[in-house]
Image 1 (cartoon, rainbow, N blue to C red):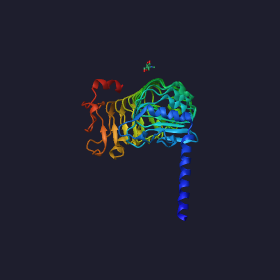
Image 2: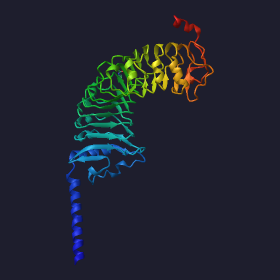
Image 3: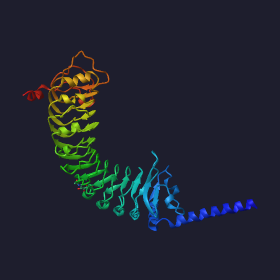
Image 4: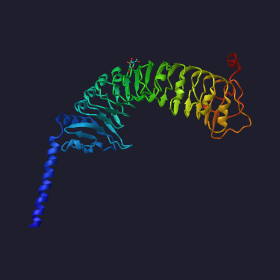
Length: 400
Ligand SMILES: *[C@@H]1O[C@H](CO)[C@@H](O)[C@H](O)[C@H]1NC(C)=O
């Protein structure tokens, strides 16, 4: 008798739980969100090896699907694809129905083979704060209507096939903290970025052009990469405004004018200004404590500053530096504190180094193609060529 009672109680509890679950799956999710998720799933497939959509069974509660997070009756976060490292991603397209998930605060897609354009309906996601669709094959332009996403903090569309220009309206979004659009085919000029909380701007590997207007980048910036574009014009008025930079890469552009002294005081670990058309003498304010400084392949001239003696890897090759290399720089090199010193392809006339001295084995030193016979023979990178010394005819004009 007692046993019967126990069983009865247990069955009732189980039934109660089942009824509750049925209640959850049919009543909780907003029907618009339910239909949107169905459309999104229809337009995407797991790539071979990915099982992301196996939990997307619409007879169950969509709020329990992989990558779907709800608050109350609405989807607030959608992370498409298995986020584990190395998992194959998704293929297909992003369905415009995504715009129906109007409470979405976060939308991410894992690396994969999603093609087609960004749906213009993304602009209906007025609560969106985090948008990251990186490393897929998204093409077409960045919708100008993204300027309606006034809550947007992170915009990461990197490693896709996007073309056209960066919409001016995207730059006007005032909540932006991270903008990562690197490795696309974007062209046109740099918009004015209005957000005073923008900390990261990564536009490397695009076809952006034009000059950087002073005031177009906020002083809140900490990370700035404009590398591998066709930017031009001076940076001497822009960079002094960016006092919080701890990463700066302007390499492989067509920037002109002098390198402002302030950049050598930034708390950067790798200063990359190589392969531009920077001119003028280079004059740090103080001893430079940046471990790696690359100023190679520019049109810099004047003497090499002794304040660079504290740099560990210093690339000054392929410029127009003249005079003798500072003694303190060579002393630090001989002490093993400078690991790399590239001075090849300049117009240097002296290097204070004892031809008998042993250069530390771990040190890379290249001196060739200057206006002197190198006092020591050291292995140089291949691109330095085989000529030890610059033709005398080229050296006369620099002696004045
Ligand atoms: C940018 O590229 C598009 C083609 O994708 C072209 O039609 C347009 O003229 C280009 N704009 C600039 C400013 O180069």
